[in-house]
Image 1 (spheres, helix red, strand yellow):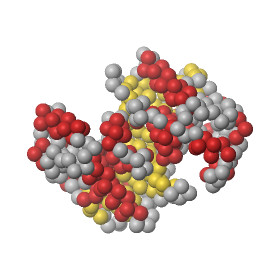
Image 2 (cartoon, helix red, strand yellow):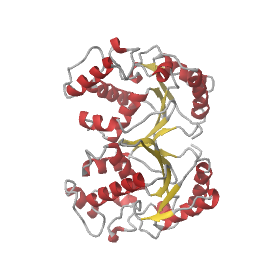
Image 3 (cartoon, rainbow over the protein chains, first blue to last red):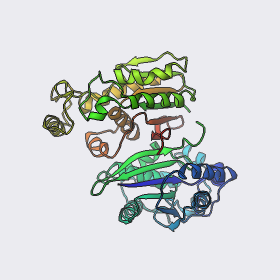
Image 4 (cartoon, rainbow over the protein chains, first blue to last red):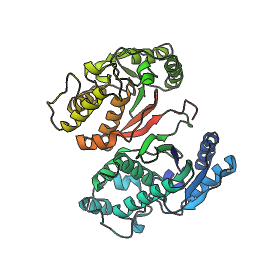
Length: 213
Length: 209
């Protein structure tokens, strides 16, 4: 049976400022500590292959885990974060949450039924779905049985949503709904299983027991 | 942020023998040990309300926790396992009797009034979970629920899909979630959006991985 451990990167400066980020954001001192903590936990697992998103904050998280556990990571584009329109980088969560008129979100919501809709230069829903499917197929094709992936919040929520719905009911609605109704903490662990010729199964989502509750 | 911690009971005799469970199953020695570890973990949380299914295995599971916290448990039928037909209790899950029930309930899943026997159908269970959330909304502070595997998955789906948990979603999604004895699932109430969100699913870090 194949087991995939999905770890979200540690806290970044943009996470503290609660703003939308691009690929260049870096870990905060707390984020580096979180990476140490999750590394401690991962050190008891037998990981035989490890991937990290190629974005800076994921690579930094993987570096800390690698130093502590001896695991070496391959940088991969499969599990990078879902991009937001370039013009919206730096937007605060409050601007989006408290303001139904925030232009990008309002416009996107108007096109919620169109999985190919693009506002500017961000990833469309269909591109996201295809990327996740390709990523899962890639993991499935690897001979390794216990695989660690360092990744990001939105892609993780979308992936869990897609696995949950067995790809049958993935619509803009289910992806966006799940996005709002799932939470991902920095360096949380989610676990998927897959038996040969069976579907992916969600074993654990967003476990962050390595922090005091 | 208001939180719900939902724990599944410890390993029961029927979990080991893979038969359809009723209300009277008891914990195994492993299940009792899991209940001790769960009590250790839950007792470190600050919570104000404790709601427990009134089945034997959940009452047994919560017993060690009651030694550690001074909260009066509320034993409630709202947290019982999704009920199976009485005539199948004790029969193997891999058996023909169960298979024919399972097959027929899938065929009739859209019919709110259809029952094989005395079991709860999809619509009954969704109605029960709606009542459970209505009860929780009246409680101040954080709540621990001690319940069962299939009901836990229904609750997770109910939260993720909001008011849109349909039989089609249910049937495709159920197979993709697995529960672990005494796994903990956490929900948080997002005040700004007035909705419950899934914060953690089936955290069982208290056991060696």
